Image 1 (cartoon, one colour):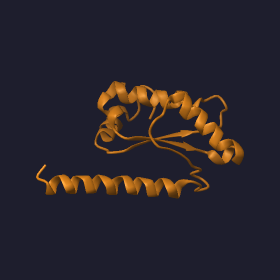
Image 2: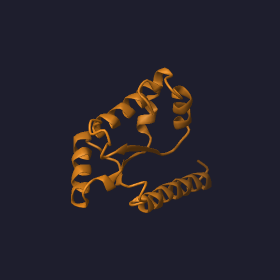
Image 3: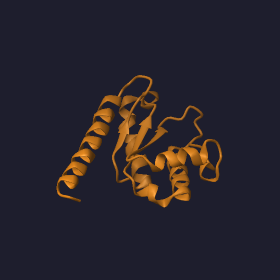
Image 4: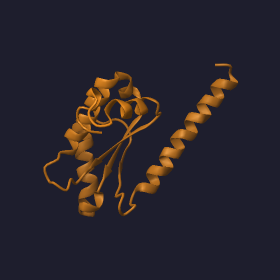
Length: 132
């Protein structure tokens, strides 16, 4: 998503309308930006700003933080860097470290996503059975 999406920039409104229909949002940000200038914290805050400007209800959806490009950090620095960002953001929802290119960390993320949707279906089935 690009800055100004809530105002119609890029795919803007069309993309945000799609997000409104989803049950789970994954915020994928580079933990080690290639330009060395981009700040993952600012990236997350920019995403949140666009979501809020479009529809505040999007902020109430489950949102998971996915740090990509962990392979660009030394293995001993990955968790420390992620935890520092999570702390600064005061992030309370799940977060993950992945390397999309190396497929590291992607399997646990996929399993947790599947578990999330399985739990959602179970809750819906129980509500339907109870007449709710």
